[in-house]
Image (cartoon, rainbow, N blue to C red; front, side, top):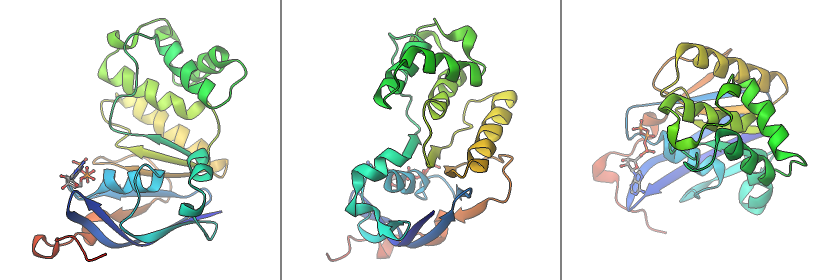
Length: 217
Ligand SMILES: Nc1ncnc2c1ncn2[C@@H]1O[C@H](COP(=O)(O)OP(=O)(O)OP(=O)(O)O)[C@@H](O)[C@H]1O
């Protein structure tokens, strides 16, 4: 299993955020995206998830272009982004059960309960999303990773708002996912305890403002 990006160019609005970006990730691998605010870490994660497409360049999964099978790609990805995806009127367990149902769980509430347990959130199962703290919401979002297996985790600043114990749990869950052969790409501004990560400084592929006009198609 190999996930590769070749010569990726990312446009946001009319601006080229990065150009010529390449990476390769094998089964069990971790790619850590670093770089200053605005360098394009979130934009790259969106490209990798299939939520947006590169202006140019190719994403390959096992040598085959991701663009040839976007639905297949979406099925192998779990993307946990910046934005809080917890519905305020539903309890933590109902939120997770909704996602478990989308992943085809036969008993979504039971799968949700197991995920809450795994992320030490069982005591919050009945609490509506609107009453959860920032860190608790973030943990409910991360507990989505435990609902169904997926080959590729894409995590945008996953440790934001987490307390120390939760950061350690996140690192342990990532380690377990990698031991099972999964891959992870994450952005971070802080240290996360990962074994042998490949670190990619996205700002190395920045395009200087003077060169940043929209390229000719
Ligand atoms: N919807 C959008 N339309 C136009 N430009 C955008 C849009 N979203 C982001 N950008 C721009 O794209 C660039 C990259 O943003 P991105 O969010 O990918 O950076 P980042 O490295 O993740 O930043 P941070 O560390 O602050 O999270 C920034 O200059 C930003 O202003």
